[in-house]
Image (cartoon, rainbow, N blue to C red; front, top):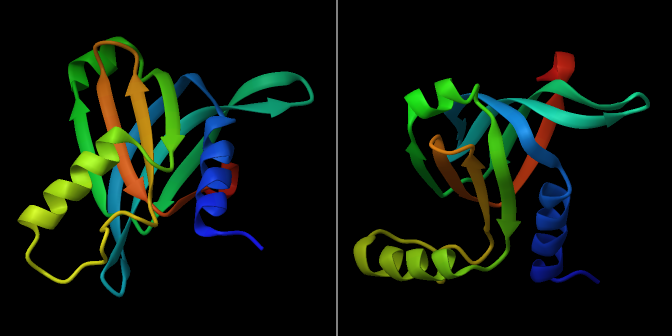
Length: 149
């Protein structure tokens, strides 16, 4: 039987196995999904494996049950670098997540789980310098490619 940590590790392994370097960020959206939940959607040209080798594929990356979205993007930097992504990673537990949980406990006075981010992963996407970065704390992600994106 899988525990929650095993599941989060598998999520991170799936995310970390994608071909991020030189994939392209085309757009960012936050959408309400109902019931007080939001997802974060990124429009990408993501490098994917094909029989002919790696190729850019139009993809929508959806983060489900997102709690926190941190953006530090330099739009001019992104423009100069063609939207290229430098690196991306996912961690089930990180120093940033631990620090953020402490801040949420101190500063969020409405009901929330304790610890507030325990079921979430930290997804981190760093653009080619000087484009900045995105950090998303969410439960899971899904890729929708081509016509389904």
